[in-house]
Image (cartoon, rainbow, N blue to C red; front, side, top):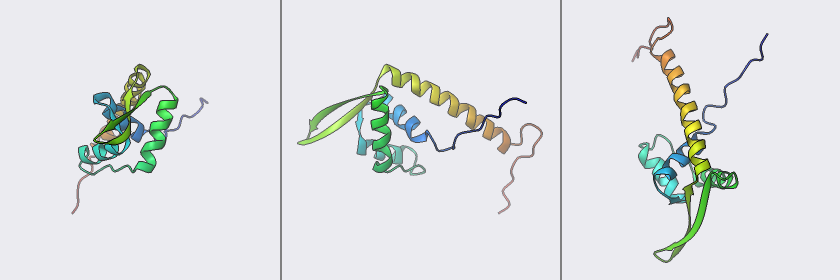
Length: 121
């Protein structure tokens, strides 16, 4: 019998995916990323600074992000940007997420001989 593969925690990796995508579009500082995730998802996803900064630091440590300190309007902030390695990591994460959501959508819409979920209320 072949070894059984398990799926990762569904939310595991989502902050990393969102952060890399946002930073691929433009460099940002930590709190700006928190606000961008909240506003661009219509507050469906809210990730606090306590979760964002460890992800940023881990991605920087892994070489997926670069940082630079800038002073804007008298405030010193650390801005993050995606490196080439970060772009590759984003592509891999996006592909995995696309496959996962497609598989879930197949089940929800009744694919593979199932029935679609009907709202009863």
